Image 1: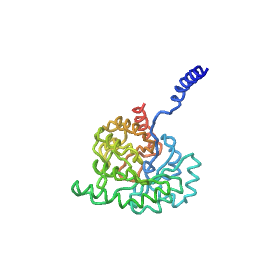
Image 2: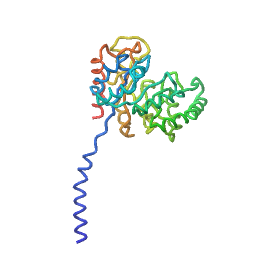
Image 3: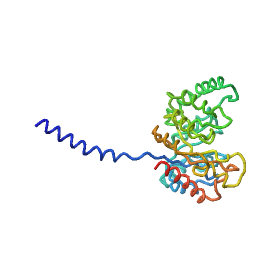
Image 4: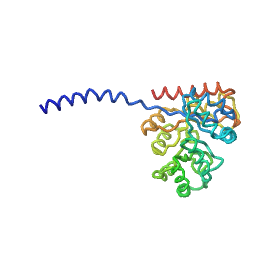
Length: 300
């Protein structure tokens, strides 16, 4: 009788297993909208566009890339929170290169109070040095960041250090050293920007694998023809996925392999800064959707 009962239980388990497996949702990118994609348009015009882009949350940028971070100080954080609720959105965080990595105390509290989870900023330290000295400078930066990361962690916020040109963290090696240095430190991670690195898909995928769980935010942003000077709009838009030459598939496969569920921002910089990437909000949304569809097709 006992053997028969166990046999029947085994059959039941086998019957249930495929159903359970089928319930596991497929991996996908978690899209967030960067307010700077709409230049200096007011939040009243941007927030209705967020869900149209496939995102459910928004990140706010300050001048000169946008004005939305300053706008919420003007209208009041309570009103901004009400606007988010009205549109069924959540708040992701802010980009604060203007403050730098060591002056984020007040911003951490603001982001926390609004329900956000991250602040993007840059590194700090001399980068025009030998590789040996650069490694030491990255280590020193990590040490200086520990109390700031601790405060962020206490408030449920992560400080995402972006790899950025003309910055301490602007090379593949510096990124690896940063990832290694912060591996066991809460409240600090990496905002990974392919634009600022060699446009080599294998290298970029390897960096993603190395950063692993310290990835705070992923920019779907390629170099194209750069964002450093005025050029015809069709050329400028080559920073967007599916318009430039970068093969995104290895990057997406690696993001899936590390089970990255943090925010992904479809991104570019217009010239001059502070304008929408296309003349109207509707056109900007349409272009972000086009890029999203390209990325999603590669995942599928």
